[in-house]
Length: 201
Image 1 (cartoon, rainbow, N blue to C red):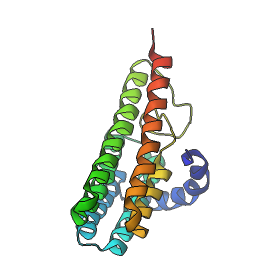
Image 2: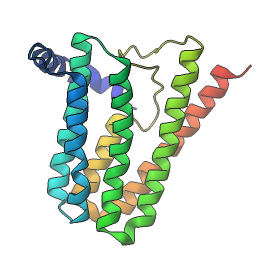
Image 3: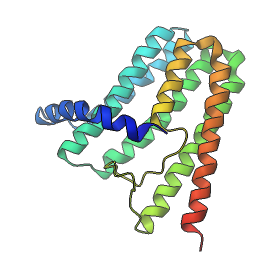
C-alpha cells in the first residue's frame, strides 16, 4: 500500500550505494542470496526465543533486498535476478513465521494462518504477472521491476512492519497474524478482482 511512496524516499540513497557496489564488482544476485542466507538465520533465533537477534537478521535481510534492486538498476535487471528476488522473498517471509511456530508451539495455528495468507498474496501476485506479461501488459507503477507488478493492501512495507512487530511484540503474535493475515486476504481478493476485469473475455 505504501511501497510506491516509500520508494521515492529510500531509492535515491539505495541507488547511490548500489552504484558503488556495482563498481566494486558486487552482483545483485550475490546480494540477494547473501541477504537470504543471513535472514534465514532468524529461524533458529526465533526458535530459541532470541527476538532481538531475529530482528537484526530480518532488518539486514530487508536491507539486502533493497540493495540488490539498486545494483540491478545500476547495471541492468536480469530475469534470473527477478526470479531469485521474488522466490527468496516469499520463502523468507514464511520462514520467519515458521521460526515463531518452532519457538512457540502454542501459536502454531496462528502461524499456519499467516503462512496460508502468504500463499494467497503470493500466487495472486505471480499468476497475474505471468498472464499480464503473456498479454503484453505494462507495469503502470513504473518501478523498473523484472515483472509486471500488481499492488495491494499488503505489500513489502506492510510485510516488513509485520515481521518487525513479531519480534518487538512477540506476545501479541496472534493479533499481528490475525490483522496482517486479513490484510493479505483483502489484497488477494482485490488482485483476483483486477484479474477478472483485466483478463475476462
